[in-house]
Amino acid sequence: MNVRLRYFAWVRERIGKPEEVIELPSRIKTVSELMDWLISRGEEYAHAFENPQVIRAAIDHRHVRSDAAIKNAGEIAFFPPMTGG
Amino acid sequence: MKSTVRLQREPFDAAAEAAALAHGQRDVGAVVTFAGICRGIEDGEPIASLTLEHYPGMAEAEIERHVAEAANRWRLLGVTVIHRYGRITPGEEIVLVVTASSHREAAFAAAEFLMDYLKTHAPFWKQVESAGSKTWIEAKASDDASVERWTTPRRNEAAE
Image (cartoon, rainbow over all chains, first blue to last red):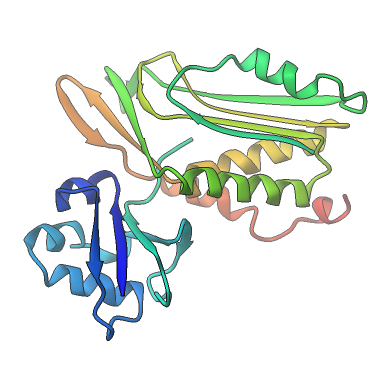
């Protein structure tokens, strides 16, 4: 399954790109498993996700917790805690 | 209920937006306007500008969800939310929330509710530029505490 990943703020800066499309390995079922898999792909990901508990995630434009199931997600985003308003 | 959610690079006119929201609605008796402004000093240091990054698509959707939630909780006649993105210099407005209702309680409460959720749930990130360096602003624990108060319904809301 292909999934679009999007990164924002310092997560984007550390990874070095705003988005990418990945072929999701079928054994990856949750957001936190996806983070672990990304960390194994290279140091830029390891740097971005060095404190996984501070990273927020969204699936198809909705906030989710890290134990959320990916199911048929089209787009998954990772970002720091928000600072708008 | 009249509702408008807009994300834009350009400045907005808070007074004109408030007037437009109340216009032609004879039962409006209260309009609350909140404008968030870019401070010129952050942690005691002068700043040159803020740059706001956002997640297009999700930002609109998330704000719309909170506007719908506010309309569920309070008897509102109108809501306008405008959030800017891009580079903003000190003194400029960043965000506008306007709420209209027949009586002030609902308008005040809904405006606070929307601002608390915008700060903690709308996908925007501020980067501050000062003395040639750029730093991402860290989320404040006090903002999380502010949003917590809306998670358990209070008696006066239940009565509305």
